[in-house]
Amino acid sequence: MRCGFIGYGNMGGAVVRALLADGSLQERDVAVYNRTPGRLQGLRSQHPGVRITESMCEAASDVDAVFICVHTPAVPEVLSEIRGAMDPGTHLVTINGGIGIAEVQAACDGPVSKVIPSITIETGRGYTLVTHGSKVSVAQARVLESLFSRSSKVKVLSEDELGIATDLTSCGPGLMTEMIAQFARSGAKVGGIDDREALAMAAETMLGTALLLADGRSSPRTLEEQVATKGGITEQGLKVLESELPPTFDRMFEATMLKRGSTKPLPVERP
Image (cartoon, rainbow, N blue to C red; front, side, top):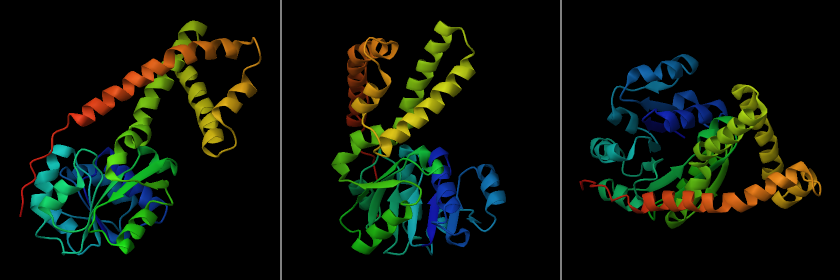
C-alpha cells in the first residue's frame, strides 16, 4: 500500500514511525510532507528509504491513500491544495476528530475515512478508531483497518460513536497521565519520597494493572478483592476513591463533550 502523509506532528509522526517499525508499511511506499522540514531529520536518518517531499501535492500524488495529519484549522487549506493532485479513487484519510467526513467530501469528492489513533501506537498497544464514508469500498476499508492491526487494536465505529470513544482512547493517554501524576505526587508528598521515584513506581504498577485488565485475566472488582483485604489499608483508600472519583470523572466527560459539541463546522471550499 502506497501512502502519503501530510503533517508530521506528534500524532502523525507516531503513526508513521509505528507503521514502519512493525512492517505494515515499507519505506519505499511512504511519502511524507511537513511544513517544517527540520522536523523530519530523525525520520530521514532512521528510514532513509522514505520519500521526503517538498510539497503537499507531491505527497498526495501516485499513492493509494493520503493521510491528513494536521490541526483542524489547517485542514481546509490542505484539501484545497491537494485535490487536483490526487487520483479520483485515492483514499483520503483524516486523523483529526475536529472535522467530519461530509465536510472533507465537500472538498474532495472521493472515498474518505477517519482514523483516530492513540499516541500509544508506538508501543504496539492501545486502540485505533476507524469510521468510513459512504464512498469507501469494502476493499479499501479492509486494507485501511488491516494497516493498523499490528500496532493497535482496531475498532470500527460510526462517526456518531467517535466522541466518547476518542476521549477513552486518543485523549486517554493525556488524561491518564494527569491522573497517575497526581497519584504519585500525593504519595510522594505524604510519604516523603522523591517525586520521580514515586512516579516510576506508580507508572510501572499502572502498566501491570492495565495489562491484567486489558488481557482479560481479571476484572476491576476481582482485582480489587484480590488486593484489598477486609478492614485493610487498600480498602480504606478504595472507599475514598469510590466516593469522590465518580463525580470528578462525570464532570471531566461533560467538559470534553461540551467542547466537542461547541466545535463549529469548518468552512471547506468546494471544488
